[in-house]
Image 1 (cartoon, rainbow, N blue to C red):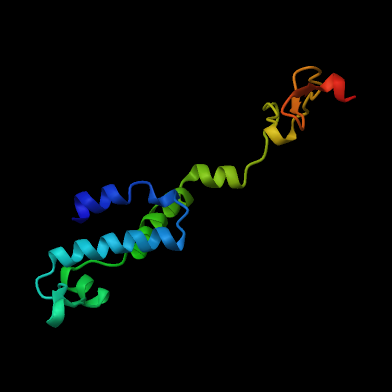
Image 2: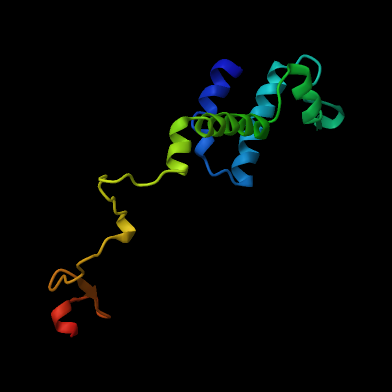
Length: 136
């Protein structure tokens, strides 16, 4: 399960933005899979066709798994440790522009020429479009 299903399920999870709803869905799948692997802690149908479900912690303990949150945290920590222990990370963090090196300008630092006469059109109230010249 962990080698195939879980690795495919969590592929790329290091960079996901995980909200509580997504985490609940992942946990739900994880618990249902653990129920199928468990021998003792499985959902059982009792009297009057009422299902009883075992505690998630007991099911995970029986099959030797942890919560999805734990697995995602481990994956993120592995990637963070890999990045933080690379010499390139330290060089970038403490870096200075060397003499003679070209000065790189980021896109937000560049000047823009916004003189786009006739290229921009805005929708009117009646659905027609008006050019920039007609608005001036």
